[in-house]
Length: 202
Image (tube, rainbow, N blue to C red; front, side, top):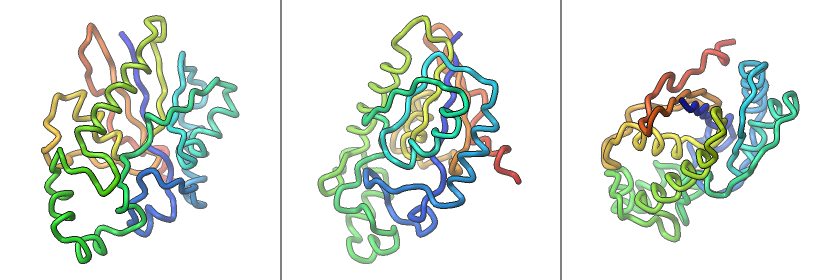
């Protein structure tokens, strides 16, 4: 039995404004830093055989309080970044709908082959994230792995775990700094906890 603990990064000002972040390197805001502290408290006492994190600043800052308290070694991976939205980054979905209605329609329809003006298609994102998961689970002796990443990445992982088509509308929203637990047994994934934000109730 292998165990994955997956975390979305804390809140940023762009999250609050509804701006598309993608690969743009935005830092946590005050609430996001508070969420990172609550996450560290939630994970206090847990030890992981391997800890991986997106190299984006918002993910690194989310992991930092736990990493400092636990003294764990961290592997930072560009492969765990959010989807690259190209020229759409920095826009809100409302402004994109007005300025580029056809592109917005393809984005909302989850057109899997649609490359986002210099960004990634969903097919390209899936290939990147599945490869990152295989790397994260590549050492047989690692029974417990922690990954800190992004909402879009977690949505794609959720689909991968449940063998859901990419075109299916999103079914499981992730709050900032939410926690997820997934088991892998004899090559089959099972979701134990998804989008758990109990540590943020305060």
